[in-house]
Image (cartoon, rainbow, N blue to C red; front, side, top):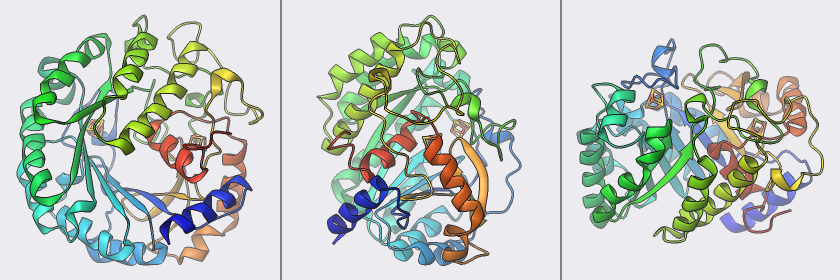
Length: 377
Ligand code: SF4
Ligand code: SF4
């Protein structure tokens, strides 16, 4: 049934229709106990957060879903996160519940797994910025590498007993962070945990005080990649080539397939850059999407506000990671009122004209729900 629904959604997305959402990225809180330099989440006003009962009401409106991604801020800062995650699972019946965390609450992670109604659906992604010195310097005293290791170790133990999956995501934030990647992989290898990597963007859109609530068009480039300035001069393309090579040894076949797709697109975009400075190549988001040049492939059609729904802590619905204008609020309004109102339609027109970003959290739903992951256009 899920596969049939996926096939129908792929057709609708490819034809520019408006399917119901199947993948929801839910920011359960903006609060964070880390103090990362490249993210303002911990500086933002937290605003209101849906209670587990309210979240169940929202997910009941959009169910059934295939994937729910629970993220923050730091989700485990919420005392009620285990209850919230269980309520979402029961209301939406997804096949996968993906949880991203900075790994600073090992005890709460254990409690969630033990309480969760369907632990085999859980896929944890724990983030690091490098080896202990680099990681701790960026994240601050409450989010240490030692805590991350403890969290991952506990999840590995529960992987056997509860059937969950766990991986580590290394955000490459600086030249030092890049140099650390091999050591980070070695550190988690004895635990049998895949480590993957993403390149830090020049700035944060969803979590940027300057950009929240607006269109971050300066970060959307039709060619190239808006690399973080601290990576200027680093051999990022060389790193991505090595990552592509190492990717074939990933244990998790789903992760391997998705990462291969993402890394190929990243390498093509990096090749088109004349240097590693933000905005050095490409033009702004006002450019129309057309036939993609080779350096901009793959370039799946974007499924934001179609198969991919983003949900903010208060139940409001932004367009995407780079356009946080809201089209409605699923706590206060019905699904039909949010999904088919004039603001949502105008935002979809904007999405259709967008030249495309290469943020992994947007690329994956785009690749899956257009079929581009298996059958590239
Ligand atoms: S990058 Fe993640 S861990 Fe760091 S402040 Fe932002 S939400 Fe918190
Ligand atoms: S490709 Fe989609 S997710 Fe990325 S910036 Fe454009 S509209 Fe947003």
